[in-house]
Amino acid sequence: EIGQGGKCAQSGNRGRGRAPPDESQRWWAKLQDICPISGFPVKMLPYPPLKLRFRPPGERPFMRLVDGPFLVLTVLSTWRFEALGCTLEAGDLKVIDDHMKRCKLGPFRLLHALELFAQRTPESLL
Image 1 (tube, helix red, strand yellow):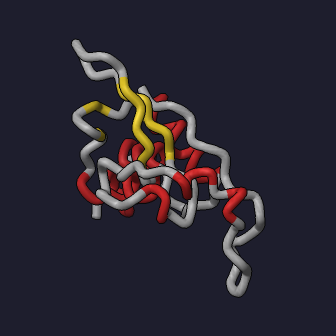
Image 2: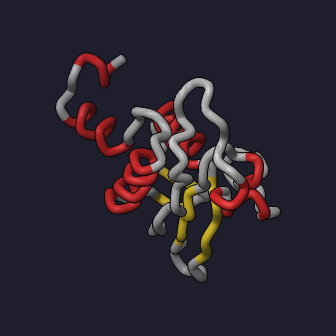
């Protein structure tokens, strides 16, 4: 099961020539965590990390901060809907997609990719 993503910096910093968010908006900048998927330091991400809660079968649940766009692109490029040994289910994909949209992290949405695949569109068969 996946948890909710963190709050996004609301400084309007996505456009060209705009200053990055100040440190008070970058709550993750003080963390020492490393994304277990990309291996990149969470504090160096220019956007908020996604908080993932995992419930592996037969194990205690755990939470990790991960690089959301890296996770999405990894899933789309491998077509393997899993992270850290746990299967990503529809509810998990919605949380990931919501984080990507809320933080304006690009157009890639996992649920949309599955919908296109289910419809057998030419784009999904490439």
